[in-house]
Image 1 (cartoon, one colour):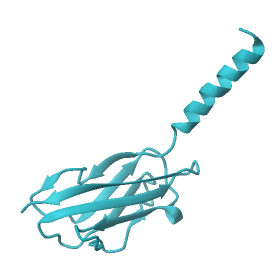
Image 2 (image 1 turned 180 degrees about the vertical axis):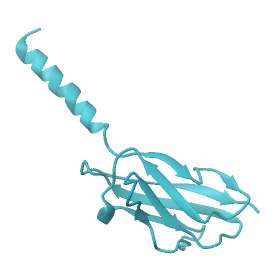
Image 3 (image 1 turned 120 degrees about the horizontal axis):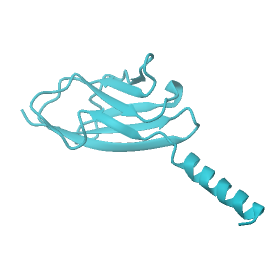
Length: 119
């Protein structure tokens, strides 16, 4: 392999490694698709990278799209991979958690999932 071919290969491998380093949702409480007997007091999302608090958002909505959280979504001061938000007492039904976060590497990720309160 020539020096230039080796350099191109090394550059491509490095670029792929950087591209997959974006923050991803690692774990959620309640978990995606879960069925709960009682309403949770809060929703917690843990990500694979530290988050930028000023540019990270979290909300919880009912089936009609109305927010049922207490608008206190935040990145945890002590653990910057953790976001949390308090929720009002939830009636039986399906709820959607929506997030958009900026990780310290400068990349935005976003997503959503649902959970259900059965009572």
